[in-house]
Length: 180
Image 1 (cartoon, rainbow, N blue to C red):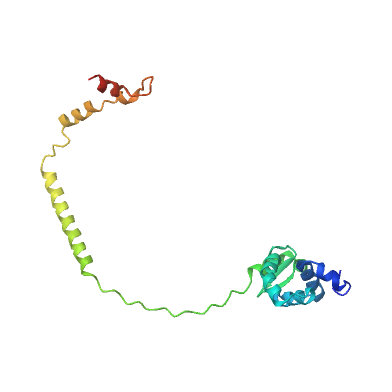
Image 2 (spheres, rainbow, N blue to C red):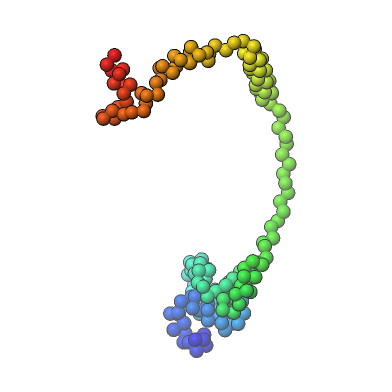
């Protein structure tokens, strides 16, 4: 099917993707997206408002349709023109966009705030005090973990109390406490 063999009325009924395929096939080389769309606009007789409404949708459709391939720089061709190896090269070797180098803004260093210095001194003092207390604590006998206190703790929390549930799902020691 060719643009020259199809009548003007039939061309208006054909989808924009089909027209793009026909245009690229007749051209025989990759074309810029705007040029392809301009030819479609001319064939379909779109007004400027209609064109702007359909432009984004056409670009999306062109990207999604498997017949078309972008070769970079918004140039489009038919996928069947390119061997698979070349398609991989086209996709991986697209030229990177040139970006303008921005000048780095130099930030003024903030002057140290006195509050931060005071906080650090307080923390240092606390560390020194804890270190002294720890050193003193090593010299003194620590009574917190003597065996007599440890036994009291063990009696209070007997392991057997937590092992078995009653039929109603409550623990044994709960019932013992209620009885007392």
